[in-house]
Structure formats: C-alpha cells, structure tokens
Length: 160
Image 1 (tube, rainbow, N blue to C red):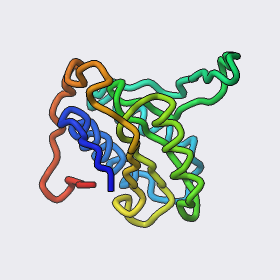
Image 2: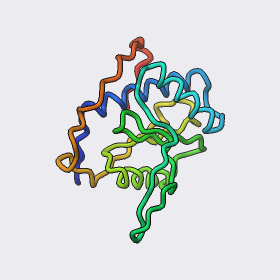
Image 3: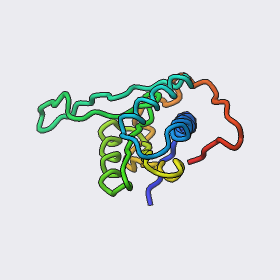
C-alpha cells in the first residue's frame, strides 16, 4: 500500500483544527445545520490565530476550458490542509471521494472530513489522504507561519 508522509507543519494544523472543532462541538452539540458549524469554526480558528481561507472558489480545467467557479471549499487551513464540513447522519463513501478529488485537484496531501452531527466529535473527524501526493514535486511545506500554541487542559485535548 502506498504511504503519504505528512509533514509536521500540517500535523500541527490538524491538531489546532481538531481542538477548534472540539470547542465548537462542546458549545453547540450535534443537530444544527452545517452553516452554523461553519460560522462558529471560522470564529474559533480566528481566536486561535490559525490562518485559514473559507468558501474558497477553485477553478478546474476541462478539455482546455477553465471553469472559474467549479466548486467551493469549506476551509483551507494554513494553505495546506483541506477541511470539508458535514452535518449529516453518517459519512458516506461519496463524502470521502469528494475530499479525495479536492485534494488531487489542489495537490494537497491531507484533508479532514468533519461531521458535527455526532455525539462525540472525535467520532466525526476523518482523515483523508491524497495517495497521489508527492512531496518532492512541491515547494517546501514548512514555509507558512506557525500558529500560536493552543492552550487547553489535558482533558480537552483531541488526537485524530
């Protein structure tokens, strides 16, 4: 099986994002619309000083024709981590495939598929790898600024 090495910079973004999701989920719980979690996650990432873009429009090229508004991403964290939010009864295979397609188009190594409609948020966070990602074909990943440390108690830390 092919393996993808995830740089420590991206793993740090994963940790910050998961902690932000934990904070949002503890405050709101499951059962709301995806848009509510989207807004609150943006607020939480901002409070943590984690750089992100939201609802980023990404063009695709099909048969030589550029389609400028082909799809919109929920979040790109630190220019290196794709976040796709859901508030559904359960994650389906099509959700994972969607994230894999986004990762391939953006040439990113890792995405998080996050379903807030679960009793425990740790059960709603899914790592999705781009198995076609090649580190040597990309600029150094360590170039983005490091987010400020997240201060949490040991009981509130979430590992994914």
